[in-house]
Structure formats: structure tokens, C-alpha cells
Amino acid sequence: MYPPIEPYAHGMLEVGDGNQVYWETCGNPDGRPALVVHGGPGSGATPGWRRLCDPAAYRIVLLDQRGCGRSTPHASDPAVDLSVNTTAHLLADIERLRVHLGIDRWLLTGASWGSSLALAYAQRHPDRVTGLVLYSVVANTRREIEWITRDMGRIFPEEWARFRAGVPEADRDGDLTAAYARLLADPDPQVRDRAARDWCAWEDVHVSLAGGFKPSPRYADPVFRMAFARLVTHYWTNGAFMPDGQVLRDAAKLTGIPGVLVQGRLDVSGPPDIAWQLTQGWPDARLVIIETGGHGGGPGMTETVVRALDEFARRP
Image (cartoon, rainbow, N blue to C red; front, top):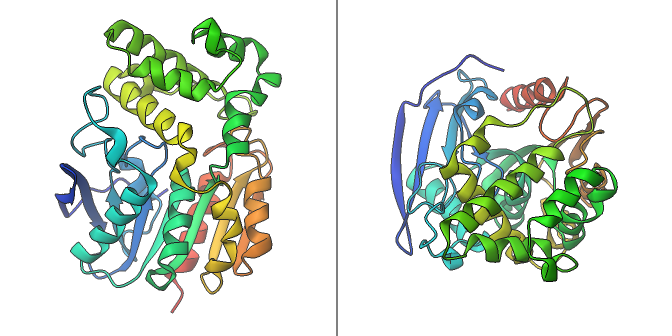
């Protein structure tokens, strides 16, 4: 990765519904515009994201999506209305930010949920996208959500049993995401906190099949874990607010947009079949499988993403 840098500009953008989203720009003000689309939903755009792009070549734009990071109001507050936090709202926010910053076209890079949101944006606004560099690619289909919340228990049986036991007994054979969403909306703050802890503990389990992965320190922050758990369960309960399989079905809309998809073979959270399926309908995409990579990490993952971004920076 490139050395740490600080933004040369930042601000809060009014996007409607009482929401303000935080944005910042780093690197070269006259460089090739590139938007970072963070994951989660609800992870926020942390400083590490600034380091993927060459700061001499790129005008790097970071955005905290609605309800998380430095955006307001924050989803950690149980009183915050999530009905105005949907995929359609996030796509409109991205487009509003592009106009606000006076950018004509930009490259998008992101991982996990960020890859899905970037793909949806590119399918809706293909004339505004110069390229896509995505990793740990997911499409947020019902099958993927069921895989993470239930089927993956076959790989991590003990941990999944604890995850399942976190919801009332009557809900354990139903939609676990919806059950957790209800607990996270409970009037009792202790019930909400326990649900957030249990949800984030399961998130920590399934990031990779590779050895050496450690619990993420971000979940120790009660504000972060509550916002993260609320937003993920909100989106997954609603099928990411997209028709099931839309991102994969609309892959042909990306024709003409060059893309690089970097996927870990050991990514149990987002198995490589999703990225592969995308390339079957998207002739301009190149899939790179990292044999030792997991979900967003592992030897060779970051290096490959940085090399792909460097390649785009050298294009006319």
C-alpha cells in the first residue's frame, strides 16, 4: 500500500431525509478521480482506504455511507430511522457527491458490500464510470445471505450454534437476520447490546478459512458494532433493497467498462463463484484468484488490488 496521507479537502453533504454524509478528497487534485466504496453496510471509510491508490496519480474520494462513520445521524442511535437508508438512497448519494465535486467520470474501487454497491452504481450510471477494481466480490443475493447466516454453520458448527442461540428459541429455525434485527430494535439497551455483540462475533468468525486471522478490534467499540449490526441486518432482511440476483443478471450493462475482480480462494464469506458469474456476462472484466486469500485479506490480495489500480492510472 502507499504511505498514509491526509485529505486536502473534506465536508458534509446534505443528501435529504435529514442525512448528511461525510466526504473527503486525498492525493492529486488534478489526478484521475477514484471513489472508494466501503463495505458493511456500515463499515465506514477508514484511513487505510486512502492508501490503495497512487496519490500522485489519483484524486481519491472517500465517502461514509448513510448512518455510519462520520455521517449523521448515526445508526448506532436506535431512534434513527433506517427506512431512508436503502440501496437507492446510497446510489443517489454517490451521484449527488459526484456532481458536488464537479467530477465528470470516475473509477470505483471497493470490497464486499462496497463491490455490490459499486456494481449497482455502474449498472445505473455506466457513462459515469471509467473502470472498476473490486475485491471480495459479493452480489447480496438471497442465496448468499442464507449461506452466511445458516449454511456456513456446516464449516463453523460450534460458532454458528452460539450465533443461532443468540435469538429467541422460536426464531432459531427461521430468518436469523430478521430475528437479530428485531433484537437490535428492542427497547432494552442490554438486549440490543447483546444482539450486536453476538452478530459481530459471528462476522469475525467467517472472514477466512486461512490461518492467522484475528478478531477485528473495531467490534470492541460499542458505537461501531451497534451501527454495523443494525445496518447489516437492515439491508439483509430486505434483500439489500434490490431484486434478487439483479447485479448478476445485469452484468451485461457493464459492457465497455474495464474491470478487475480480485477474489480469495479461501473467502468463505464471499465464495469465488459470484465473481466468476459476473465475468461470464461482463466481457471487459478480468478475474484474478488469490489462492491464499480470504475475505478482504491474505497474502497477495492487497498487492494485486494496488497493481490493478496502478494499471488503470497509466491508461490514457
